[in-house]
Length: 600
Image (tube, rainbow, N blue to C red; front, side, top):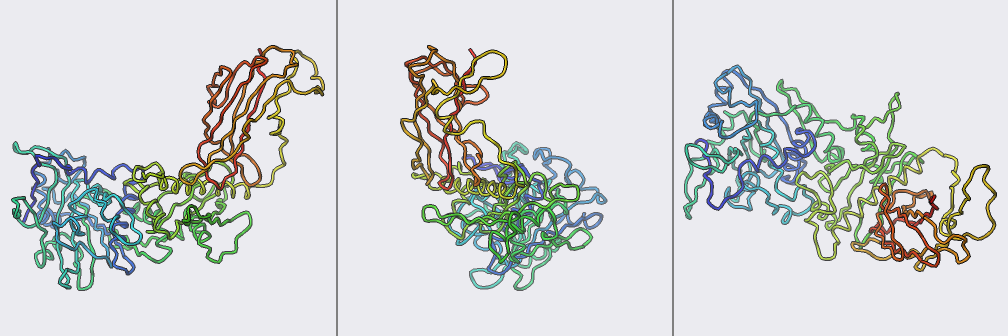
């Protein structure tokens, strides 16, 4: 037994570091990435009972470290430490210093199926976790809700190791109906040359290498009694009868155990509060820490919003809580939201982290928070929870829209490509509805304010602007004569069906001077706004517009590309054709052209 380094294939292939680098920089703490992905792997491998996951930290030094280094054959890795170009500090430089502590982390799951199957069959659990990368077959063949769709989640283990090395010890039920154990070591390094030979960077510790019927080199896992003996030497908790599942040892673990606990709470609270997952975090002293999200003041408002979304018999507090059940689209359920006004501390600050104010926890089948999706920057501070429907089509579309880190829903994901843009439309519609409903509730929850008199009504804007004479002194009273400027809709604003079940607003209008105008031409500024209307008829965000202009030459304002400056001669019509970006059919939008006379 010992490490075998895979020789580079003349036809290429993924370098070992590809297994370790995929999730190294996802924009969140490494411990949170580990908590998210490791638990996801275990949940996906569940056997139907409630899965239990343990993160057990251990520190070895002295004789224990010496014994571990020998059992793990780390000196073989240290031989080529220079070629592996690992980041420092790492343990390979101090293997011969017994008093220098070596940190180990064991991620252990129970009530899971384990790494069963032929180790070299690409459909086996063993092969998928330890020997393949980017294999999406799980998402294509699995029944029910699964977390991943890319096959990159396993890289979280090696990326958490300072030497990118792990061991997997597993107990599973074989095709013969009996329980079996096996153990296997994996190193995921850069491709390199060593003693004038090229290597892919992938290394395995198992049985001595052999060649299969096609002459290919194969390394098998260690099984049975020998597996148990090595597992004991490496510090694994040995598994007895019925204790099916997998334990992953992260060698030279570069993680903070307390941060893992926080990561479990932050991202797995939906499954924890549903009592569908047990997690224990065990520190090097042997003390157990149980994640308790309901006691976390930064999470309690989200949990409350989650209960509201599910309609758990909560009597809603008017102006403080709201449930929003989305209408169907294309015959599909679209999910539901719960919202609450974020509580504040004695200093008047929201109890949730600042970056999660006015955000919504996105939740689908596995009951992990995919992301805390920002939806507004206004007041009062709101938090929410969106729960995806128990609808296979929508669940699959949301899963496909996620990048390898599974940290957002992206309607522009190439995995959603289809002829009718249905996938993109569904995902975009869900995100739009979340944003709209949060903002509506924000308006309802805001303190009452006096109605502000608008400078100009929509009708007045459509008919034109009153021109004021230049000069000082008090302004004269409004002229009772008709405005010399005419804005006329040849096609009043109307909605047209767009791709993905969305709508698009279109309109055509002209601007001209009255024949009786005393001026031969006037300089004008036209600003086009297409706001989304909130419940109280207040205007929200403007939709992007596509505009074509005929009859006059226009110059776009640098500050606002939908502001046009032009000179309008008498007897000339400026024609504007307007088309909005697609929008949710649940929205009400308004086209508002504002015309101002510019000083010459």
